[in-house]
Image (tube, rainbow, N blue to C red; front, side):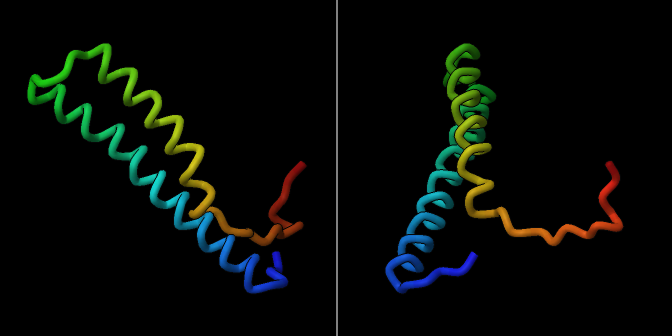
Length: 79
């Protein structure tokens, strides 16, 4: 993809930064409740719910900033 204007570049950078921030927040939604459950501060059903939403969010936001275009080598593709 080629970015044709500085505004589009700024928008792409802002989107990537937003995705990184949301990825970190959703990762914390997985780790923190599990740690609090281990410490005895949260009940298991609440931990499961929060961790489920965190996992879904992480799988949504992380590929946005981690993805890259991979070249397709026709010799490597098997149909």
